[in-house]
Length: 189
Image 1: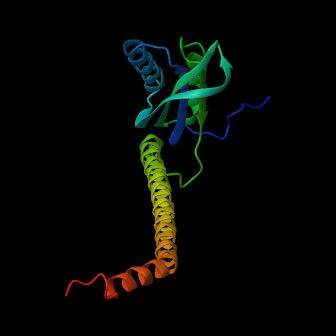
Image 2: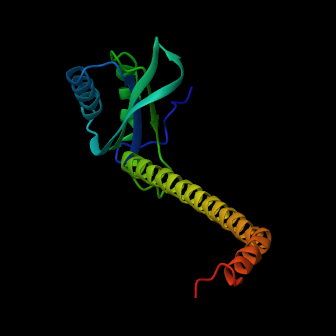
């Protein structure tokens, strides 16, 4: 029976991506110890760490060993392909590692820290929310101003109607007052 990895030579080194999920309930000391243990396990095979990307706490789609939230960390290591086989079993039995996955990225893959991009995305999203809130407030202020203008126009129109109606009713009274003043009997000249 042929061996699984016959075509792999020991001279080849490749970049591998390791993603680990561990409980969000760990203390800082327990978390630091776990990450040191994982790194030690990987580096014992001669692997060289290229990057470490702490994604932080995220909710899980389903419970894993009773946990609904977990912390993620993604490592990139340069190592020999045969070492992956040696690393997988110790990682499976490492306490507090809920899940792990080892991936060989495609050729031309650039290592990026997605946690930095996520932080920027959160800031951009917050700015967008603030901008939408500001636009909504501006629209509301414009509506209030428009309503106030309409109300002022209504009040002004009502006053104009009252002023227009008063002289019609007062013409007779004004004529009578003028006749009274002009009459010779009441003038003391």
